[in-house]
Image (tube, rainbow, N blue to C red; front, side, top):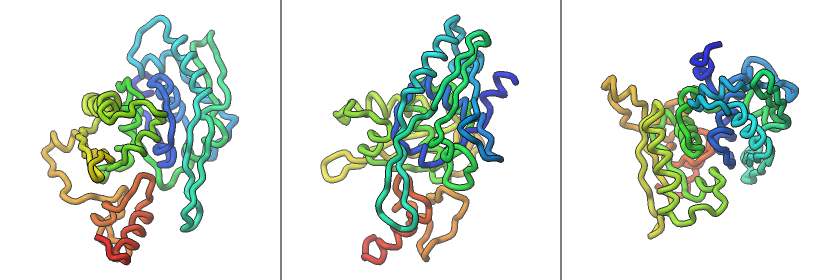
Length: 290
């Protein structure tokens, strides 16, 4: 398989994993995403399967021609083995309590230095978030993030892709800090914007198929939320009119509980299904809220 074919593969992640709390370097992201593209979606998989990433694969994604590519790959794989991911699990039914799964991305690594590759085995807990996804998942192409050299930019791109049909996403600053697992880094909002948000937005605009603009919203006098407005660059080039109404993150454009889709979109929160947002809008209407 050619390098171009390799990076043109699709990535599928459950929305819960897209919104999970974790921090990976660009090198670790490239390894993980390369392995995810190899997951078969048409059949069950087990944690016995090994996924291979060669130095050539890594070089194609990183754009490097260094003689130390294999060492970079091997070192990043070892760091990845030690990384944690915190995944929030929604309760069954309409209960309000959530639980959090803390797990690792991979359970073992096999180094095959003579062939210039490493093989990784996903952890058992990770599998449900990568395979046999029929709803509540996000899809994009590996080539979309191949040129991004910031882990924050890759995370932001995924979060935008999750709401690709909406064209706008609002998240609280605290939620974004938690999702990026900053652990007290950049406590001042000006530093958070300078070190995380602005560089990530710049890279998404420069290297992906999306354009994105960002703004901030205050709660009282305090900046509490970031608002990202985005769309496909191709839509601008072809002169297609931008959507004038927010669209739900699914193909279903009908009202739910008698509430228009644009009203439901305003009540959506990170991690919500469309039905969850509709229920929240319905309860707000019953309570006499706007």
